[in-house]
Image: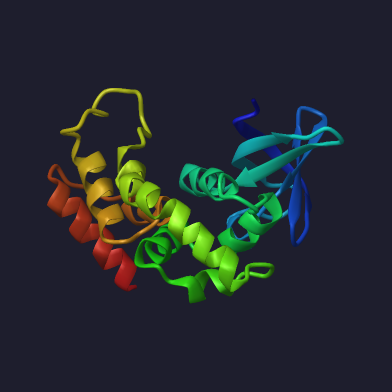
Length: 198
């Protein structure tokens, strides 16, 4: 399985990007949410990915975060929801907001996605509500460093977990904590919240 694609953006379109990895171009279908985080052509990008194998095609999907990829996998596990519909749902906003919508039974939020009718929205909620409730803490448990200080008592990791608990996405958290100094999680969180208000 192709789990990551890292290289230079060769093509950037409304529904896909092509990433040049050592002279080979990989075409990845992406959501509007992921596309917002893809830089201009010629810039370096790293996308999490998932390969869908079918009888007549191999289709690669790209995601700005692991959180979005996990939600994509949950969505395509729902009966009658294929990758195209899943990407449409993911284009509706940050993964954390969509997870909250599913947990809250907000069919209207899901129906805002092209190709998602009331019946499909209800099916997504029925089939994923319990999974979403169990998956909510997952982003906070993602290990972003394997070096020293990556244990559960690492102030930066605790601050990251706290900010995610406040509703920020992983990408937003990393941006808010960039350059933050402090030995206690609360100091780092305070810095991040000051940054968020700017």
